[in-house]
Length: 310
Image (tube, rainbow, N blue to C red; front, side, top):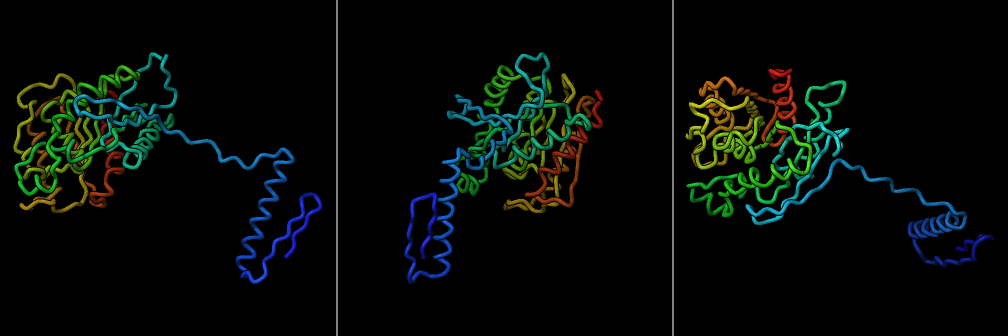
C-alpha cells in the first residue's frame, strides 16, 4: 500500500501479508501523524487538556504527639480571603482523605451554604487524612483476640492530644476560624467522637456521630459516665447520633449497632443538661457502608433548622 501527499515527504509503507485490522490501525497512526504535523506547521495548537478543578488545598502538619506528618485537606468557602475580618465555623472531618469522605462532605457543606438555601453557614472543612484508623480512633481493649488481630490499636489518647494541642491551634492560627467547631466521625470515627464527648466535651460544640462502633471492648465506653455528669456545660453543645439498619456487631458477645446507638442517646439525655441538645436519627434505608452521606445531610438539617440562634 502506498500513501503519498504533495506537501509532505513521500512515505511508502509495505503491508503485504499484514492482517486487515492491523493495516487499518497502522493507517490511522500515519494519518494522525500527518494531522499533528500539519497543525504544527500552521502554528495551530493541539486540543488543550483543560485546567485542573481545584476543590481545596493540601496542608501537612508535623505532629509531635503522633510522631509523624499528617496530611490535611482544607476546603475554604466561597469569598474567603485572608484579609477579611469575617470568621467561619470549622468542621473537622475524620476519615478526611480525598478517596474517603472529604469530597462528598464538602459538597454537602457547599450546597447547604448556597445563598438561595442558607441552611448551613459558610464553613471551613478540615479533612484529616487517614493513616491508621484502629490505632488513632480506639482506646486500649481488654479483648485478647482483638489485641492479636489488631496489634496497633489503643492510642486514641495520642490522637485526641493531636486534635487539641496541635491541629486546632494550627487551624486557628492559619485560617479565619470562628468559635463553632464541629467533629464528624463514622464507625470507629464515631467511637472516637463519642470518647471526646465523654472525656473532653469542650473540644467541640457540635458532634455528628454516625454508626459509632460502641461495641469496641464489649461496649466499655457505654459503661462510663461523661465528665459533664452533674455539671453545667459552659456553652451550648449539640450531639447528633445517626444509625442505619446495621445489625450485629463483630464481637464475640452479640451486640446490635442500633441498640448501642440508642443506649448512647439515652445516656446523654439522662444527664438532663439544658445546654446539651441530643438528636437521634434512625435511617432504616441505609447500612453501615451507605449511611454517612445521608446522615450528615440530615444532621445539618436537624442541627441548624432547630438552632436557637436561627
